[in-house]
Image 1 (tube, rainbow, N blue to C red):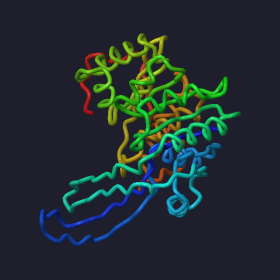
Image 2: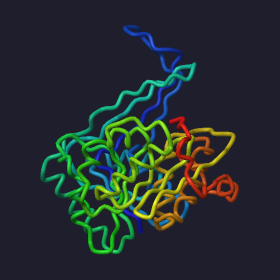
Image 3: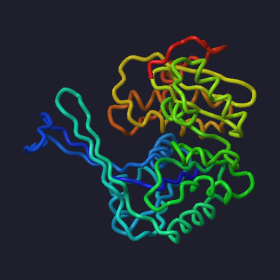
Length: 309
């Protein structure tokens, strides 16, 4: 069982429009809505591939009903009751492909609601292999929420964190088995630009030396990097027909957790990301043998390679 925690879930609305006219009336050509939140995306990917999972999220009664309706059984949800309704994020997609995003902050969580989320996750984690804390924090939540989460886990349960900025930095020195920054998030965490693969390896190694156990760094078109005390491993996939890269990072984390973690989990993790990129919608299809064949795990890292991401 893999338990995910999404502190600030959302309804993600996409409006397709001819173009943005500031101060004018814009009529949408079409509108869609999906359940959003990184942990929910991870659980949805795991469910698609037949792995046991449970997505924990703070939700009001009405929000829980809407979220379950949008998911349609694509991922099991355990809701922790709160007062405020979940946020709505809006993506405006113009005819030329330009995307403008407007994200709401989310409901204000009280100290009692935050504690209830921690306690419920700890109770559900009994018997789990991984607990993954994913995404931004809701207003009112302490910046060290994920660090607190790691302290509450039963023995033997490994914790992964996919977050950014102070919430991720607060996990340093805690019982966190894995952090999964992307290229930009790693740059923010280390405090300097990382233009080459070698720069990323050095930065990730510095964080391992500082106390993080393992880093899984998503690098977009440049694949992914696994770094721990034993060194760095780089894997990538050369593929045509990318239909949608939204959720590829969440699929990467889901695949890594499903494969049990460690260096050997990198190849299947990248294959899951490939499957997400080859899926026509934001819900990934099943991983195929062709997806696995697209992955190359390199014997060494090309330090001078400049990154596209």
